[in-house]
Image (cartoon, rainbow, N blue to C red; front, top):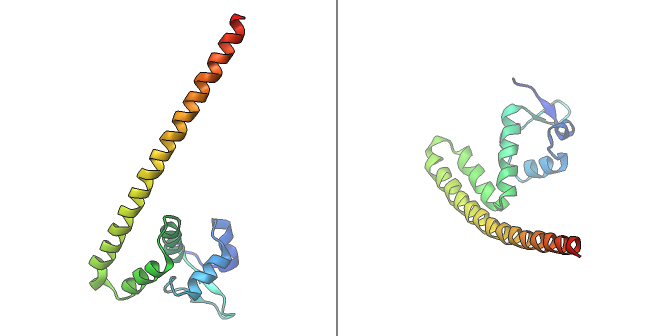
Length: 129
């Protein structure tokens, strides 16, 4: 399905209009069209690109690296290997961060289990009295 929407309509899809405008201004949203009133228009491809950029940002990729990826993307198929390497490098960073986060979660779960055990023990003592 292909459709076009204006920036202000993108909030229905969970996309922030100010963020979209900023990303477009910074040059990290390639191929965004404008209507006769100079309003930015987004089609399915553009929305998917925005979601990709938001995923990169949410996983810690700096805007400078995203811009570098976009510049490579604009150069075409000759940069596929370069872009793949960028994504592979970022993926490794994300995986390392996730592994560290999982270790933190395990520590939190351990403390919760201790609290549950202590709480259960206190309740049993109260019943025995």
